[in-house]
Image (cartoon, rainbow, N blue to C red; front, side, top):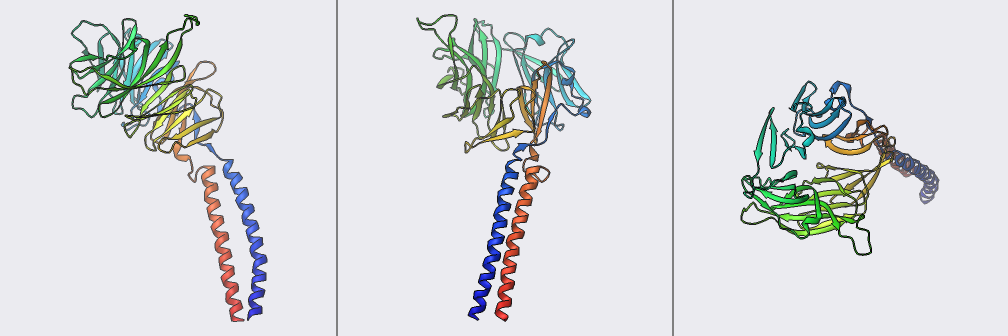
Length: 413
């Protein structure tokens, strides 16, 4: 009996070493194959002709926002430059296109602020002290008066959705500079801020607990040894608190300085924070903290479902960077081919990431990336992952079966 077990172990040892060797070769080859399929599939330049998208008629997309709550995935509102002038419209379906303002209306070229929410409500400003809203085919206007007769343009707006009055923080242009003002629907209150006269505010979002994030560029006064013609500038990110009380001015409660020429992208996150990106850095912001990463980009898109950001580089780059906000993990994703557009604006609608931009001839176009293909069986990487698991399990099960079968035969002998 003992001699039989020794014989079995000797035979099985030879078989197991051979099987293990083959398995290791399979692991190594499979790893190289999987590593070679890290590119994002489903990348497409251009649009589906069946969608009949209105911005395709334009030479350049000046501004665009998608309506994520609409029944049609491509529903959007936009301002485009066409061969005949400017067009400001809303498209809720292939055959459902409405002009927000008449084409070539002189007010379109005076737009200083344009935004649209997921339900299709468009907010814009085309004249001093005026906020206009487009809802269900009609435009309504509201004149803002601070009781001092001030005249100011409106360049940005963020709404405190937790308040019954929807308190707002405005970015305004006045007296040749830039300012912040609170608006509770009736009263306009100016922000009293340190060195505000030297800041050009670019964008603002609401965070939580009556706290907003305003971003802009701070111009540093030239020192005696520097030329006044080349002043230095820094990115500024400010936490601003305002509860809507008309007797209390909005307060800047925290200020951080960053690097880069401008903040090109700013988005509110699902947890009441925000992400911002410049051509040199990336910021993860909460209501009371800020994290800075040394990541350069030209455009950034926030994906709410998975709480992560996608950062794009210059035209011609061969990969994009994905950052998981909770863990801070960075993953570089290869593109199917070099980025053919210089990105200007992006958005995620459903499982598709859209990037608008312009090519080497200055012609406007759009790239779409189907994010649902990543890791699925319909993608090369997903198929290899599946095959790797299945073949590995087959080899392990086969070895276990042969071992049991041999042991049974020896025991009977």
